[in-house]
Length: 496
Image 1 (tube, rainbow, N blue to C red):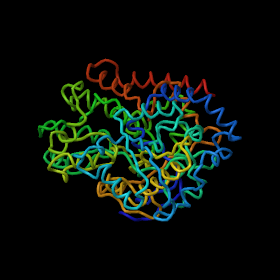
Image 2 (image 1 turned 90 degrees about the vertical axis):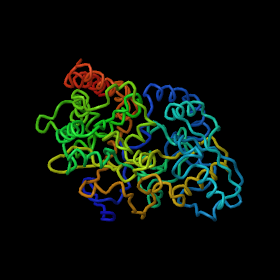
Image 3 (image 1 turned 60 degrees about the vertical axis):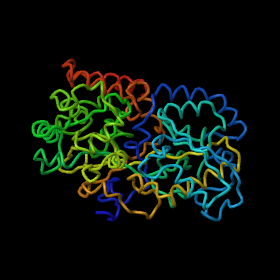
Image 4 (image 1 turned 135 degrees about the vertical axis):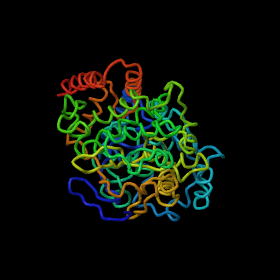
């Protein structure tokens, strides 16, 4: 299971070796995503500064300006840890979303422990970690300021064409790709601007003991099978079959991550098909158990059939971790990043397991593979801070063990060790989203913004509305999907 070869035919992989291709869904960046209107505000806020920068650098965000942005004079592939930058003395700031890792009580390895190890190799580079529970929006606000108040940032929702306006190039994508997987995910015009902290895919976190107590002997592979299993859990146990985490908008937005390769088996769906499809949320008449409609209908049917918490308005994210650990919750639809936290939240870590999302396309289940948050370096930092930042990013990637510690897929090329949480994915094909067609790099983002649906971009309000309508017996799922199609279709028309 752990180390079969990766084949590039159609960008579908059997097994677990990671491909150096772009991925658009399933990353923590999206889970804790941002609102599209804030992204536009941030982009507008730096417009003037960008023009000044372009004039000074003699180019835009592509290959013409990356050399000027990189004041350190060293690229990611050129860094040799323990040798490069031994004479660098700098104090840098690292912005990230992991507020839990800032606590001394974090059950895993916290930021203090990582920094202590880093300083054993680089004692003259001081790293200040700043975390924020509303990170995705806060990070965009920091970008809008366009200053040097930070040095490394987990990159929020930014159009690929704008990456060079904010971040330093790590080097030519082809060269960076020899060092790390997913080098094309945060790349534009042949330059890579972000290094993923780890690779991720999306499925369902579940309590194996609850499933066993309910008499479930095989994991569900279709929405109908999953709903049937949730009914067994309700009938035969005291657990909440599916916990929605309704009160957390970002957790609701996680449902968007399953509509691409997972639901369609098509690596072109998100970036090439959907931007030209005026009704991507319509029911697939050939197989209603597949495509985006089936994903959202799974949630709708669970709520409508009373298979979720009694009062969705009272859900609590932090306490849900312990509840699924001790068997009070049967399942939650979240990315793999959540598994480690839930294993650490109680005395029953072995009961917390992970399964593929219950959709089967032509007899095969898929899991979309993409990067977690990517680390970007501030183009406004001075030379020594940029070099220190690039060294720290490479140390985090190669030496820290962060990916394995957090249940992620290692990003370093050649490191194919897989976390145990993926034991139920051995018969699943990994699928990596194809990039957008040339000249359409920002088309999905523009349509996403114009439609105000915010797919894969943190708009959990629309998913919350599915819960409300299902619980109150208001709109049907068909009515909701029709409304979404009208908004998306109008945006596609306006961009064509």
